[in-house]
Image (cartoon, rainbow, N blue to C red):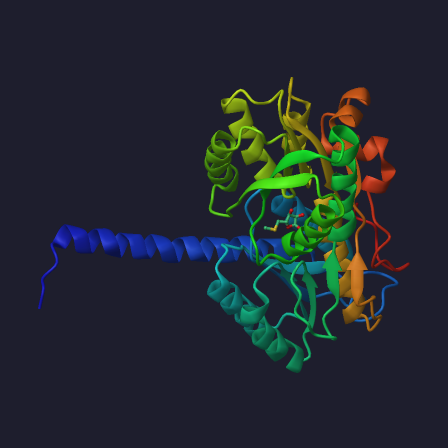
Length: 360
Ligand code: SR1
């Protein structure tokens, strides 16, 4: 038998102890979020008694969009007296399955599935439904009539951007496209891009790239730099995810191309606003919802199901087009300021009921 040097053994033991302590700390942290499972006056059962436990199981957690989504979900859960257990997403399909199983074992009443790969989720979600647990899904099509689907109207989102691209650049230009297949929102946006190219034959897709390897923006920037070098004729970049747009912009800045390119993206955050407003920024427009509002809508949809008040099967939060000019003219520097100037960005009337307190 191979003998391990003692120091190595002690180190690995220490690492394991640390891992156990870290896991316990995370569990404590999650339990800490449970403090709000209070009764809600005037609400239907089970909210009138409190103690409602809901799990939010993420596939992706990094980046501004997903952090704001989680914060919005937490805020709405608190307003409803829900004990929200959040499972961090690490882009690991097996881990997300395991987390759903853990949530079932924990005895949650509802599960919100945020992104993921349908094929690895369908059976474990069915297991939850069979136990009477309610399930809602954001941006992952589970193809189950019992699971309401929440989305941002990715069709409208992409159409708004591409209309703006034509307004700014005409309908004959060389384009770069940032895309990764397999994510429901990106696939829906891609369908619009394909139709757009058919309808605008003088728009030429010269290069396509994309990755969701962390850190996403930097990985995309590395690819974008190569694409810009190989295709100096690219004038428009369609990058419909803010992490993609940041990467596209980073590479454009580094190659001194900012004045030659226009980047069109999805999503918005305070740091995106800063990047769009930056002097000579090539990032000229984005189409977005408020991700915190989408998180709140996801929790409300789960709450409606739990109260026996079926939400619609397809729940849509409408996006708005935000251009660099809008931000500069209206002196908007933060998401909060965007909400002040455009109230539609502050709240959504999707999945609401008189007994659900506003959290937006
Ligand atoms: C990798 S999928 C990224 C998208 O998910 C959400 O729908 C956001 O809008 C983001 O663009």
